[in-house]
Image (cartoon, rainbow over all chains, first blue to last red; front, side, top):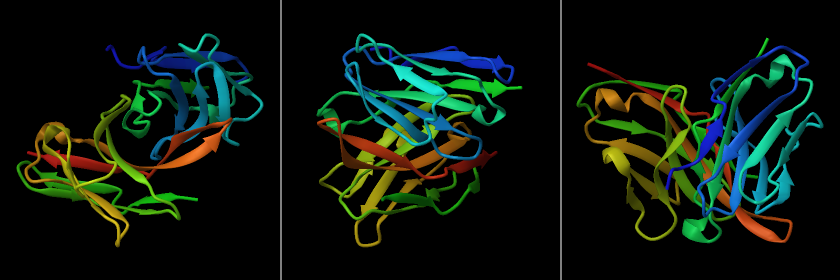
Length: 115
Length: 119
């Protein structure tokens, strides 16, 4: 069990550019979540996948954001036309249906800085 | 809707002293409760959780927490802290929600408490 991994750990981009982040969940976990954490705040829910299906999206997830989990394993989060307000830590978590009532285990996060 | 309030944004304490980090929640349905720790520039690590049963739960690194249903609280305690406990601590509630024909535990986090342990 290698835990949840995320890549890259840090990303600096210019306003207007597109960025993509990757999350690899714990191997047997079928549920995957994305969160956004801004400075001085707790993580805020963005979206939830069970296997390859995206089943819930927060209203925080604007049209510029898209998430996929094509084969029910790794997931990607893409932000198009980045804005300075997108600067945040993006966290991924995974869980196993029914195990300890969906206890979520988090990755190290991707810190995005938009200049 | 549920909410989580962490009553102290910062808690300074000396090494080997006891510490309590306070957490209150609000929810109209039953919840599960979690504490996570976040070290600088890292993700969240699960410290402990309350699902059911005994209201006193023990976690990693010598931390424990007590669920108090009447006061809707889940305070985190450690009898003697170390320098290495310096980090930000997040309390979270999990509520079952339905989405796409499934139900899952949706987490809502508090704003965090920065614990600083001084030598």
